[in-house]
Amino acid sequence: MCLADAEGSLLLTRPARSRPDHFGDALARVDAIEQSLRWGEPTIRQAGGGAVLWAVPLLVNTQLAGGVIARASERWLLPEDGSGFPIDLRAACEALRRMAEDANLTNAALLRERRADYLREQKRAEAIHEMKTGGAQAMIETYLREEPALLSAIRRGDRRGARGVLNRVLLVLYSMAGDRLDLVKSFVMELVVTMCRTAVECGGAADELLGANYTRLTELAQTEGEEDLAHWLVQMLEGIMDILERRRDEPSSVLAAALRLIDERYAEPLSRDDVARAVQLSPSHFSRFIRRRTGRSFTDLVNQARVDHACELLRRTERGIVQIALDVGYSDQSYFTKVFRRYVRQTPRQYRLARRPVRS
Image 1: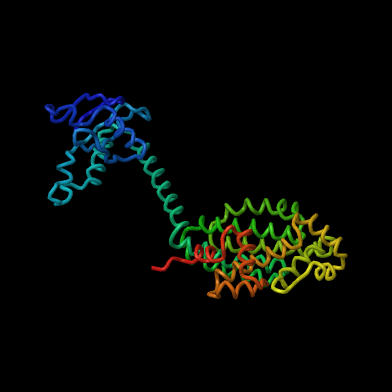
Image 2 (image 1 turned 30 degrees about the vertical axis):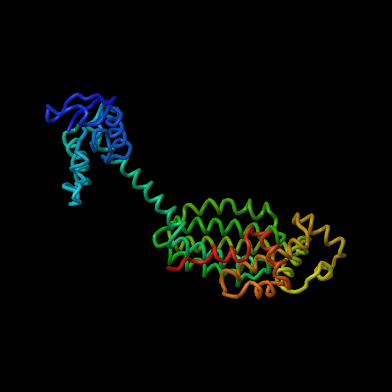
C-alpha cells in the first residue's frame, strides 16, 4: 500500500522499501483516487510496471487531500497457469474503503451518496437496454400492433372500441413491465400525444385538445400505481372523445365525416367525388376544403389510411405481401411497395422483418 497526495506524489509506502514504480506513475495514482471519489468505491485500475491499483480518497469534508492506494502485481492476480484469482478483488476494494472510513480518513456520507448515484445510473442504463431488448421490445411490438386500431376507433368516434384497445394495451404493458412504472408511463405519454394528434386531424380544436389537456398531462408524473395510471389514461380518452362529439355539430364535422369514410372504405376504389358527395360538398370545394384543413390532398389521405392498415396486417398476420396489397386496395404489388416506401421509408418486407421478434 501507499499514501499519495492529490497530485499523485508518493508520501509513504508499505513496505517502506517498495520502489515508487511499483505503484505506477503519478497519473495512474491520481486516476485511481479520482475514480474512487467519482463512484464512491475503489475500482481496479491498470498501471505501469505490471501493477494493478485500487484506491480510496482522503477527504477533509469534501476537499480531496490525497488517497490510500493498494497495489498488486498483475501477474500474481492473473497467474499464467489459469488457476484463478488468489483474492476476492471486490472484497479487497470494499475492505480498503471501510478501513479508511473506520479511521475517519474520508467522507463516508459523500462516498455513500456517490455509490447511490452510480446505482441510479446503472438502473437507468439497464432500462435503456430493456427498451432495446427483452420485455420492453415486446411492449414496443404490442404498442405498434394496437396503435392503428386505436386511432381508427377514434376517427370513427367508436368510444367503446377505443376503450377495448386501451384495455388490451394496458394489460400487456403491466404484465411485461413488472415494477417499471416509469417505462409504462413513457408508452402512455406517446400514446396520448398520438391520440390528440389524430383527434385534431378529425376536426377537434387543437387549442382545446392540447391546451385543456396540458394540466392533465402534468398529472401523469404524479401517478404512483397501475390503477391510478389506468384511470388517468381512460379519462384522457374520454375527454378526447367528448371533444370530438361536440365538434361533430360544428363545421369541422365535415372533415371528421370525410376522414371516417376514408378509414371505413380505404380498401375500396374510393374516389374524391364519392366522399365529396357523402359530405354534401362539390368535388372542387371538397378538394380545397381538405387541403386547407389538413394540409394534404385527398389522395394522400387515402394512401396514408391504406398504408396504416397495411402496417397492421404486416405486424399481426402471416399474409403474403401480394394479398395484403389487395386487402388494402392496391391491385398492383409494385405500386403498393412504391407507395408504402414513400410513407414508411421501408419496403413492406423490411418493415415486417424489423418488427418481428427474433426467435432463437
